[in-house]
Length: 395
Image (cartoon, rainbow, N blue to C red):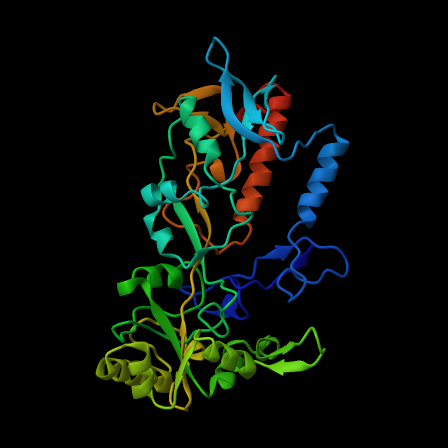
């Protein structure tokens, strides 16, 4: 396990005042030589899963892949006692449960109908970044509802990140002046989700741009004094040569992903913003950069990035939905409950299909909550069922 400085816990944020303080709490479970989870070319996400699977198998667990759960089974007393699934060859098989059935089917990020009803703002995200495609369809919710379950009493909790593979120096990494299509600044640009992503998705036309200038390298170093070199330079995998980020910016400009101009007036025209409004916005923002006090939104001084050196750039503020949590109503023992808060015998929910945990927004102040609660409650429910009891009564 190694400390990972992820995009949601950036350098120096633990030293900011109480309003902005964010502790670098992310960790990566890796093998020697893997590097950090955020290291380019070494994205390792499965090590902890490998450890858990190995341990579970050693203790008698059996994993059955490419088999989709379709329907829960109840006995005459109303207890959930099994599940009917579709096997890889298309046949149906029923798995009977001795202790109980635990739903661990994930969130609803792959189901547009559910998103439209329970989290419509997520449909304004540029892309859905969750994988694999076709997963997280809310199957556990539909199976649970059939069994008499109620939905989470808390509203859905989407997590929309700033991650986007086409980004170069966007709001995912940097605190640049952010403006909407009307040329207005609309909020604090601190690059932390969901603050800036939710703000963008609420803008007119669902568009916004990060504005920076030809002096961008100075502000990259100012905002990221311990990691600026890796942000400004990368290694070409084909040649092994070091490449300055300007070439990536130029490629993005040529591909229409970034807009550039030699004057702010031209930039506004290219983007389609009212020129006078945009110029006034830049002038006001630069005033806060000079004074070191952002009187509009309170961005700390070292995260303000003055605009004045051509060429000028406008890069879209990216949004990628990673997860949208909306689960089944549960009690403190992770038992799935009906609308009257009564447990449905034999049915449990863990992970992101477990409701009543988040509400309105998925917090990113402590990375790894989805995995953490899935592992925690999965272990607690499993241990309780092994003893023919529930979590609160476990010895």
